[in-house]
Figure 1: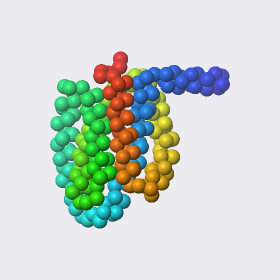
Figure 2: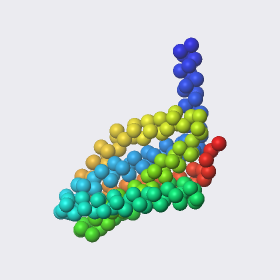
Figure 3: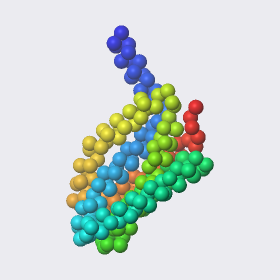
Figure 4: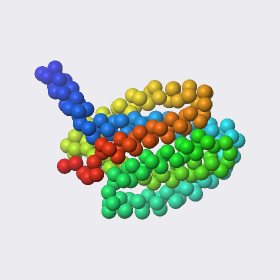
Length: 198
């Protein structure tokens, strides 16, 4: 009986992996995780170019307040325009700070990158809601578990590789983040649905 149940679960998971939407979401989340591993090095970049942390914290505070307002407005608009556009915009906006950090060697470009990477978090609630809408209601928990498991597995290796890349060239780290976001955006545009799956 136990063997039968294990086999059923295995077949169940494999059938999910044949689903284009699920596979696309796994790829997108893995690519976003690569971006996340790259963006972790932003404070080190600030230290490298001699940025005053008091100024950085001030920018975070100001942008955080703006974030709340923008998030509320975007949540309202997304119900009218559809969440997929905002999900893609969320990923696309991640490319901008990565490119700014890649060319950053002084205060202005660094702070601008920090501001953009922070204010784009206003898209996060919409992106999370869209993720749920892409999945079948009856199997959402299982599929989300698979998506997160794949991302977490990659998350064990990628930070180490990004750290090694940092030693070679800090600009390459942020260019890698921009590339990952670009690929995630293209996959989302091509393979993810515009409406809720019934």
